[in-house]
Image 1 (cartoon, rainbow, N blue to C red):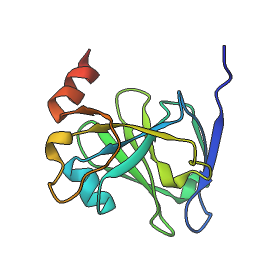
Image 2: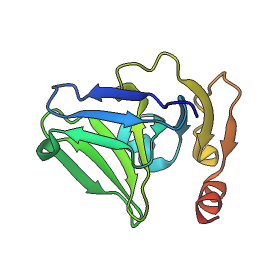
Image 3: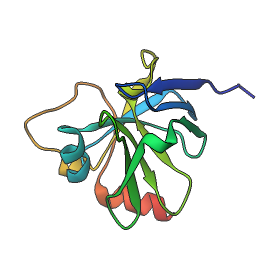
Length: 139
């Protein structure tokens, strides 16, 4: 069995840091309206389920963005820290939060049906609509 790498990172001001173990070094883009409003564009994220540890937790603010998910941010500098599900262990971390993302493979896009027409990525990726994302989560 291959040992999974731990990736580290921190917010802009350094008040919050993270260590996360990823299933694989891939990242994806979420085009849902909430992610675009939150980030100003698509959320480029990595998935790490429950293998995440934080330091500076007292500086983490949490916003209940829906019935099923929360978004975290640094209360000092405002850096976006995570999107997490409420009912099961799942974290999506903004890829840029991590110090070493140079070898991540951009391989998937979700809520592709909500992507505006004014931008596109050149990479060939697996694409899921919002309905497909929710159907996959229910399976």
